[in-house]
Image (spheres, helix red, strand yellow):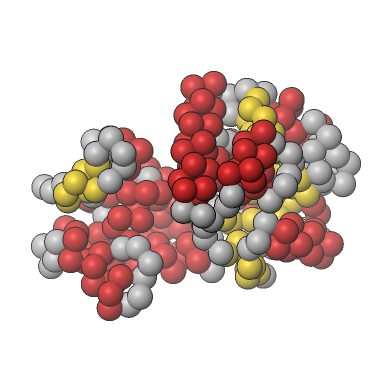
Length: 292
């Protein structure tokens, strides 16, 4: 299989698939990003081994199954499964998936990991393969989160949906199917509303970041607070997502001023060392960082 994009999600999906026994070609045009992704995967495998989640031999075998490429064409050549996990911009996703499809196996499963863009629109760039394009929305961290959301585009074939579900299950995941290609699908649409409301409460001074996150963890059984999760996923990615959803679903998805300011200031979250919270070199929270 091939994973295009070596960011947070792409590297996580690549690690997950390699651990499940797949030979994985991981592609990114940025060689430095590929190196960072490999270092993150190595560290993750080491941590999972130390915790007994996987044994040392299995971890070593998984790492040997990862093959970096700076060319999409080289990575996707003859691949049976292609998953794109590049930036949430429609033209970019269309271009990389079309390039991958042109060299992949003739009946390859072509999946997009988009969290909110139209699967139908992405597939429109592949006129000879629209029935083989499907949304496979993984969650961060992909290695640990149990769910894969399968999104059916307007022209996605039933066989493709079945193949995507079977592939997800081979990775040890459970699936839900979003049967209508609607912005935000099932999960991102709900999560966006929750996180935006948390940002509004923070900006209004209703509560501190720590207390808002703690309230949702302990009172509503969230595994992680929405503000901390925003730091993990990247506020730049979230801003793109809610701007797109606001265009189609209305004002309730309009980004807050604080979110725009975070991105403008380069406080993108854990990957930059600062977001809603400030982080140490090991990615641990030091304290909340004021928004104003």
